[in-house]
Length: 211
Image (cartoon, rainbow, N blue to C red; front, top):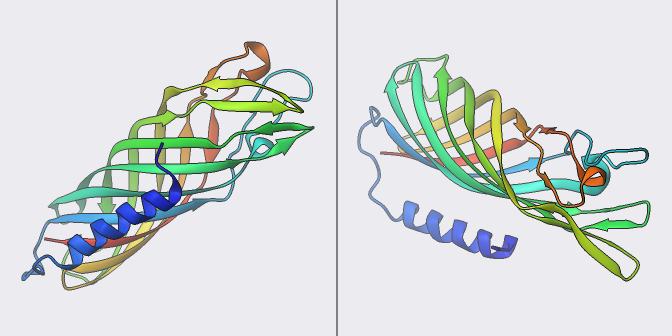
């Protein structure tokens, strides 16, 4: 698994390659690459079944993520988007049960619905994405005993939100807020670890390069 410091190094390398590329000469460039980072303040939903079962928010702290995406503006009001990310929710303790980190790799396709003409430096848009997310296995430990709580699995992903970008020449800075839905991960303990689907609300900032 890629650790957060390794992911940061990869992101800086990619950023260096982008900044040394030739700048876009025309304002009508339609393709863009974005490097993004996000913070999800919580996960909402039940992380197990039965009396006293934890919520996701009991088992994990806030999530941090990074990723990259490509977009292409097909017309003044619509862009197609595809991307991939890497997210970590640090494990927490609940009633003397310690949870390991949850690692999520979203892979998605989506669209942006632009509310302002494409020649304006300030862009407001609505966006939605569909895809899948790899949910890593999660272990639990109590005193000296440990075991697997969830198996690794691919789950359905959906999100929708709003965003804005300020563009100057080939470069732009973006800010987004979204509601994201993830299906439940696969149980490894039977009923006790049978979780519900979960919701979170990531806030994302991005550095965009248009060409």
